[in-house]
Length: 247
Image 1 (cartoon, rainbow, N blue to C red):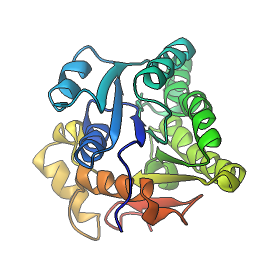
Image 2 (spheres, rainbow, N blue to C red):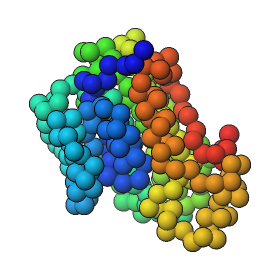
Image 3 (cartoon, helix red, strand yellow):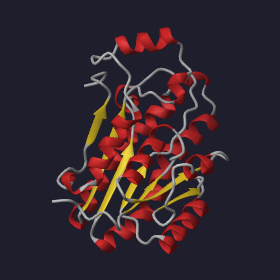
Image 4 (tube, rainbow, N blue to C red):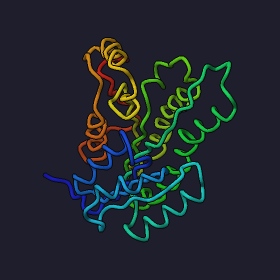
């Protein structure tokens, strides 16, 4: 029996590149109503190249660290498409540095973008979900949040905190038929990994039991599943997608 997803509205933050872009494409191709947010100037053009039916998709600029931007975007989404049923918290940044040399702004910017924004955006999203007694919240974490990594104390802290956020919120919202889960990718082929040399990519692949880097589609496919009715009994979980790098 197929799901009636024609009126399900999905909001994806940081949707203009990498994992976020793959998730945006997957939901759009699966006939959801999809809104992808972006911050960079090129983001709108990238997303608009995918959208052929503006009645069920849009690209909207949003700085996830701005409370005003978040409020304004949610107002636009509700006016144009209706209540949000699925949230993908994907937007994130890195400012890598050894801890002894890490500047206050490198810590603050990563925590604000990767963690505080999840608080702001999720709090706004659940207003709709609680009213409709249905919702899916999917946070994009990282293997680094589980294993740690030198030079990424700020990033690892932000991603590790998502796990506690996910479990606690899942307990609070379960009675309203709202699930909350985290996907933690390992090494995925994105613009960031393209900057690595062939030797570096080979060395990384050797450390992974499946002997390869993952694709953005590996993450997008799981996001589609977690948003579906097939995953209605899964909540409070972190699902690793890392080829066995961290078990």
